[in-house]
Structure formats: C-alpha cells, structure tokens
Image (cartoon, rainbow, N blue to C red; front, side, top):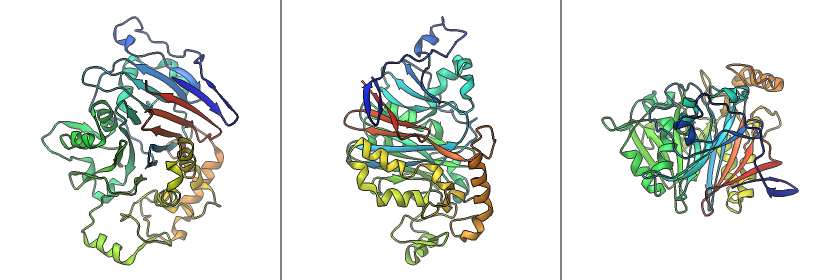
Length: 393
C-alpha cells in the first residue's frame, strides 16, 4: 500500500504513472517475477518481486562510494543515503515471501543506470536488482542498512575476509541476505558470523546498522573478524565504531581527547585518521531524542544532516571530515582543507548531473522505517516538503 503526503494534503496514492519499462522477454516465465517499474517521482520508481535470483557476489563490479547516516531510536529507524549528484534512479522494491525467505521492502538502485535509460533496463538487471538493496525492513521487523567506512585505516584488510573458509558473501549483498533470512537482529548477527564477508565500494569498506524492536547492532569487519556491538549510541555515519579500543593509539586518544580540524570532541567514539561524518554524528547525537517520538520526528532529525550542508559556508560547525582523503586527515588544520573545499563548493554551485567522476554529493533519500507497523516513510532528493509512505503487508 502506498500513500503520497504533502504538508497540507494526505490521500491514498494511486499509481497512475506511465509504465516505462519495455522488456524484450516479457513473455518469459522469469519476467513475470517482477512488475514493470512504475514512476512515482523524478528518480523514483516502484517494483514488486514475487521472486529473484540471489547472488552473493553482487557488488564486485560496483566501483563507487557514498557517505550516509543512520539512527535508531525507539520504534523508528532513520537512514540517509548520500551519493553524488548523478542522473541515477532509485527503486522502492517489495520482495514477497517464499519458502526460506521473508518478505521485505526497501531501497535499491542500479548504480550504472541513468534515469533516461529506465525503459532500456535488461531483464537480467531487473532480476539482479534486489541484491543491491541499501536499506530495508522485513516482515519480522528486522531493519538494516549499509554505510561506507575508510578501508585505508584498516590497511584494506576489511575488504578481504572475515571468516576464511566459510561461504563467501560480498559486502554489498549483506543487507539483502539478512532481510531475506533473519528472524531478529541477533539472528542476523549469527547468520553473518557464519559467512565470509569480503569487498566494499571501490576502496571503501562497508559497515552496517542492524535493528529490531528490542536492540540495535553496529556490525563491522575489524582485523579479519566480524565484530557486532549492541551497546553503542545507535548512530552510524562513516567511521569505525568498533575500532581496536585497546591499541596504543586508541588509549592515547581516550586520554587526551580528539582534535578534528581544530575542534575537540570529548566522550566521542574513537576516530581513525580518515574518519568521515564526524560532524554529522555529533549533530545526530545532540538531537537524538527527537527521532524517537514519531516517524516525522525521525525524518526531521535526518534532515538536520542532509549532505549538501557540507558545501554551505554558514554550516556550523563546518563539516571538515567530509573532505578527508589523500593527505588530509581529521587532524589536519582547517586551512589545509581550503583548496579541496573550494573545489567542491564550486562544483556544487553548478548543479550539473553530468560532471563525472568528481561531482558533489547530496542526500538521495531519507528513509524512516517503523518497526511496529513495518512501514517505510520516504523523502527523495532532499525534498522534505513531500514524502511517500509504503507498508509491508
């Protein structure tokens, strides 16, 4: 069931969009396992799957990265997907239950696909798309999403293996695997401990937030081992929450405080040199309570960290850690960031979706999942005046 809501209007949304997908093999048996994508808005489509072909190696050809923020408070799980300003459509996908698989609803995208090419999607691409699920919730009220984390700070070991000798699963396929099979968040952790997770997005690793109505885990690949904690702030941006707390580096930081581009953070998670999203994490922590009151409150909380604020000179504190990379670390002085920030701001002003590969980033979607009602509240392309509601029946 889907509804479209504006600030002053609420009504049942009846899908009347033009059917854009033309499949060459529409009469085949496989084609009947998914509906034609139906356009809900620019860069947003809806698809239902009665079945799909699981592929645990999905992601090996995906060479991109994203930022992202995630929060869980009470009944609500909020998530921003931040990616470059490209002409790429997203898909709300509902996957039906079958023997050995739970029903779910979530967000996916074919990252190599342009919006103008939706009517040319191959059957193979459509069948594979559920494997590219970035966030979602299943019929048991298990919600999960992936964010990137700086693999260079782990000497890239996080991209290699977590459990050598066990069945291999690419990091991109982890969200889909858990949504399909997990009875609870704790069960999802156990499922992943039995797998050998590898890969990421280009040179970035991935980590995950996994929740149900009772608890939340931050799951990361640390030193070749899967580490899952359920005693965190229930916030995840783009740095390792489980990073080696007993190393000399970590103990030194814990004693002296952490300086991030001139600002000192006390009582904060330990930060590795390439940590990204530190300022977003601090904002989410400061305003955390408003996210637990309602789905609307969680959406407002996530709006506080919509990504384009990284390019606004008036953003206070300025989000320096969004520009770490290369020779820049969280300990670099603000002046050291000047050139790369100016380049990013200049690119942002152009608002040109065809600049590749160094475009600016924006929040593609803000998703709020409701554990009790198994619903998805969705804002698209940083538009917070309108949202779309979906229910997992």
